[in-house]
Length: 214
Length: 214
DNA sequence: ACTATCGGATAGTTACAGTATCCATACTGA
DNA sequence: TCAGTATGGATACTGTAACTATCCGATAGT
Image 1 (cartoon, rainbow over the protein chains, first blue to last red):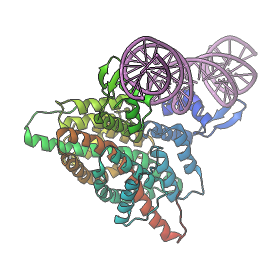
Image 2: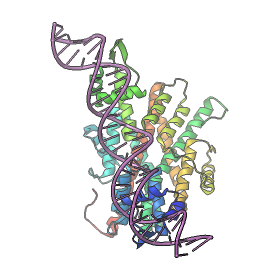
Image 3: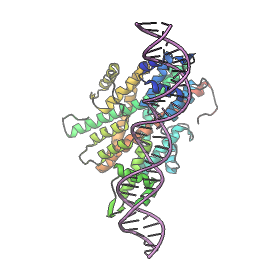
Image 4: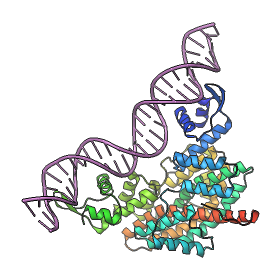
């Protein structure tokens, strides 16, 4: 297919597709002449993946390029791809020199029996969150971490099962992307639903009846 | 204190503080004369909260204004504040007319025994995620939702306990903000840690030894 | 008295994510 | 076949968000 059809199939405007081509988010089409190229089903799929990361995941174009690089690297293990992807998804203001936050994070990781890897992005992100919590006067926040871990453990199992439940390695790698980007968004939504459900019940116990919510 | 000290205490540059004042994220200082104002401890605290939302939560200035509006509204119930805050935190591309995604979401909510509130932000966000998943060919993704819910339920309990464990109502409202913004970030980090832990173990079983990770 | 700082208003900057325009070709339908 | 539309690629432009910088006359502190 040519660019117009690619645009129709994916819902992305032609100039934006050209932009993505320039930025290397989309491989060039197969050239059939100097100014004529053919695009495949793979291009449609890749384009949708890019849009999902940009719109739902809120990733920057640079971060998407990073992730796709990991996807396309045939050497990359699933394990390493996960690292790249978590790094791309997280806000880039990693790290903090807050000693107390660092200590809270270290204690947490060891309490969970996890390997202490202070250089990993996820760990740094955690320290950053704890440091911020302390800055706004919520050092108590760290007490919630074990609850988070209890929730995260089965989630990680499910993630991995989902990823491995695919088929080919390409599919598994894509499963990592989908599981991470859509997974974080879905988890946030489900968590909000659960919280609302609970606080709705609590409120209903105090002031019976009447519907609410936007 | 005057603006220079407020800047030093919070780590935010003076011109940025002025910008936040203009944008209504920070209440004006108490004027002591035509061009002299005094700022309080509350301003320092509020400023840190704003930075946490912007930097860690990735909220836009408009979203932060929204959230602070909910915080400052004395009429607002905890329940409603939670709604406002989840809405501000979520990406703004809500909703989708994908019938199948809508059906998956409805079935999920009812399976969980939760109230079906198709207008709520959290529900719309969920539909959006499911629709996107389908677009990228991952209709299987919906199968993970029940796992998410199992994880989210105890989390919501912990959230609420944290919020109510504060003291005054102001503190509780702020707990909602912190619990949501920092909570989402922390959950993403902990989830990444858990996933890495697990996939590290799996990998170690196949190819023994050698350290990895950035 | 004098100099640094202040608040407030206005204007400018930077980065990002697209959009728009050109142009020389290539395809397409009457 | 040939007018008219579409294409790939290069370059230039736009819009928005989040700051920054400059200027001003008015204090504040010494």
